[in-house]
Amino acid sequence: MRVLFDVGGDIGKLMYNMGVLGVDPRSIDIVVVSHNHWDHVAGLSTILSINPRVVVIPPTSSSKPFQIVDSVWTTGGIEVIYKDQKIVEQALIVDLGNGIIVITGCSHPGVLNIIDKAFSISGRKRVRAVVGGWHLIEKKMNEVREILEKLKEIDADLYVPCHCVSDKGLDIARKIFGDRYKRCGVGLELQL
Image (cartoon, rainbow, N blue to C red; front, side, top):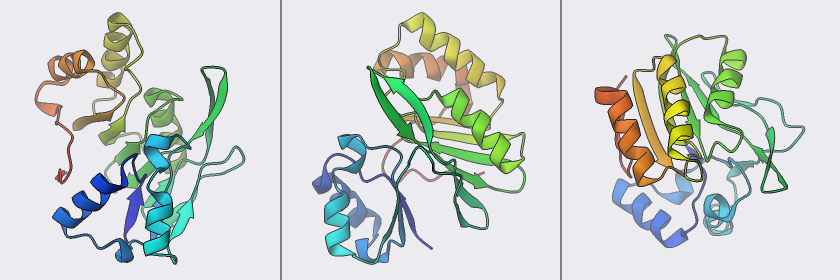
């Protein structure tokens, strides 16, 4: 089962990166959409035109956690108001047996809230890795530091901020997480 989490805002980059990684778009079984912002869904119509059999799992207000395979779930929709608009966002949970990996899109509902939901769904109390967008880009640096310090208390093995984090936020994350920080990028492989 091959799962693609979000399709990005630039289909050209997505297709290029998939090509470099040797991923044929026709091999994708499921696309999980974190939330309906252009930079997460712009390439969806192209993926569907190449692979019309792909199953798309969008977040909805009423969506409950969805089990994709034995050890992979969505969180189901988590609602939040952002800039006077309701956003429904979901994340992925991968259960490794000895803890979970939480994969986020932007984390509009807050990365800590998403992790709490992942704990309640999985029944696990250990996070092996937090990977994805943490929506810190619009926060003041003291708020960024406070959120990252709370995230450090979770004691994950790896912290991999990928999206919606400013360069200053990434610098703070590097300092706070030390050797548990990983720079995110296309083709990153995590070994846990």
